[in-house]
Length: 425
Image (cartoon, rainbow, N blue to C red; front, side, top):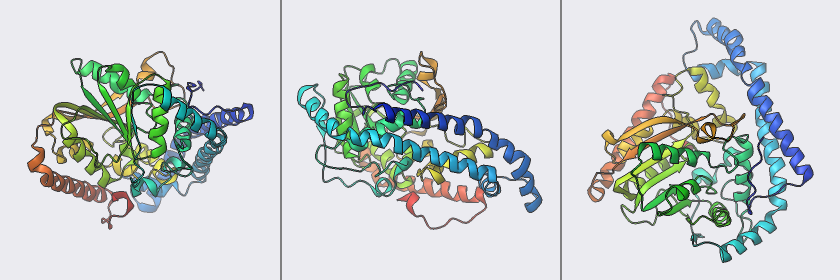
């Protein structure tokens, strides 16, 4: 695996820690790229015929496939191995991040005191939303909201390490491929865009924020996240790398910014970690924040069923929902971000979804066994609805669209909808 770029805030492993991390990388590569593809044959040659004999029909949905594959020892073994690889990854990198914690706290203080003009706003009174606080997403120990003390950056540093190891280096050494890919898309599709202000929603540690600052040096770049240590770490990281970004601990469902404040609103790898209700609220808030001539782009992993019509592929991608603490991922897969954008008040004629190639795969950095070389974008241009008169109507439309989508999902699954629980928090 190509090494992660060593900026001043990155936890640095000692020899034995690096050896363990290299072992985990090779283990995960083998499980994902060698053992994983063999499960297709297990399904086609074993689970599928067994299901047909028992049910007198072929599997019709990913839920049928799930029932069939859960009887297969090979699948049980693979799933256990894959989950074990994730736990081994956290064990290997947590040792490094915790050992480096005090040094990074001091380093962050020095950087904030001496470098750059970018601002940092931490809101100690902000309550981390339950859909984040109740789940250790990706099984990250302590979750995104973990704070161990004053000026702490531990959870942020752990996330920075994990993004590189979890993607097996597929996000490039800077971890910025989602942002780089969005910038490449904007330059090609909207070459005349000159935003005065940019907002990155759910910025985590700012890896995909910095390409926006590079691409639009005259713009005022803002980035928000609910996690205190994430924005504190992101601020210090950006200052070390010489970028000026205003980071703030803020809930994207309800921000402090004025109406129409931003010409470009983006997010990267955000919605698949967001509940259905929060997604509606974020879309509505983005509608309020986007200037009439602005552009909104949300980039995520290409999970939508429209891009993966094959039921086996859909079932395969459900693994992270059930076994990697990403409970909202399947819900997002069944949803339409375009519909959610329209329900929030955006003009349906100016909303579209597309897939784009990865900038890392297209550039000089060679993608190995990491993320696929694609990103799913939902793009909106020009917010034209009246914000003051349509707030309640927008929310009602959003609720109606989501109820319709939910009924459709259960109809496809052949089941009656159950009362909404955590996925709609």
